[in-house]
Image 1 (cartoon, rainbow, N blue to C red):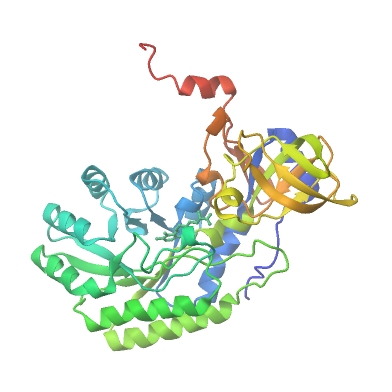
Image 2 (cartoon, rainbow, N blue to C red):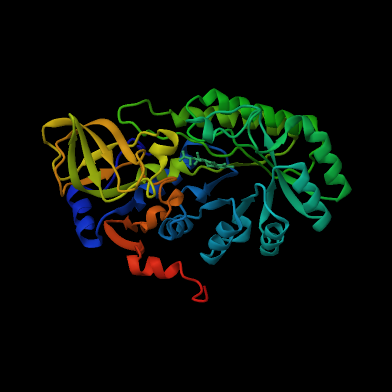
Length: 414
Ligand code: LLP
């Protein structure tokens, strides 16, 4: 039976309020069961015998989430030596990890190469350096599929203006380098962007990169990786993509290609957002209500250092007033405690009356929220809790202000 992915969280209001009391706010809460459901749903939607879903751990490298996904035999897409190290420490197998490198240094290349993880290389320059240092090895090549998509310009990762990938027209040069260093191209890769609404763009990008594989001399392919970018529903009551249909179209494109290529290859996808976005919540507390000549401002104990998407991408995050869900509606700016005017989670948002002391829940905060956080203004990151089968577990603990200050003092010699 297909999973009902429109189903929302398994956590009810009282449990949220209980976690807020138990661990304090601000607090990140993840619904572990939902993460597993989302991960598995892709295997149901995309019916390909050799399918691998690599979780893009940049979306959220919370150790509880990674361990849970590992229990469900997940594969990983990593983008830095730090991510590779964490994945290996948590027991992910070498062959289950792909390293998508981007503007790495030679030292980083050697550090990751020592682990044995497969490299996904996105520039001719790095391919030459890799080949010279490690002739005879296996690599994956990241191409720029010449189709870009995504929720906003910062997260569109292909086309003319992007730093990512080797141009399709440079395939000949790739082959020259590969021959010179006796490398084996075992995979080709593309990624068009994050939060892709127009599924035709994905199909077109697949066709573009597959055409390159067909036209050129890539005899050793084991897999094709079509990246991530699966869109989730940030605004309630907006269109949900029909991933069952999407899956059918994808498999038919790939099936046709494999017939022409003469071998049934593995198909990879590497979603981050789709797997974790909707399972995450940031619970914050209101401490100041202000009326600025008619403009109501709710000041809270968190800020854009904890969740930067609204400020950086003008992203919409649904916010619920857990403490007064049925209150009379007013319009608010919901702001943080950071010393910048842009520090707002929502502007001119209709909400049930917000009072000082109310707990607000920012939804869809599982992807690129904690992982893009910082300690700007010297405010520590929140604790993180994962809830699995109704049981809550503290995964990261918010440092005290004293611990935060201590962590910055490396030497007393100054
Ligand atoms: N693979 C590659 C090579 C990527 O660059 C990305 C994301 C992914 C996979 C995963 O994409 P996803 O399935 O999560 O859309 N911070 C932004 C998103 C940045 C995505 C960057 N690359 C946001 O909060 O919307």
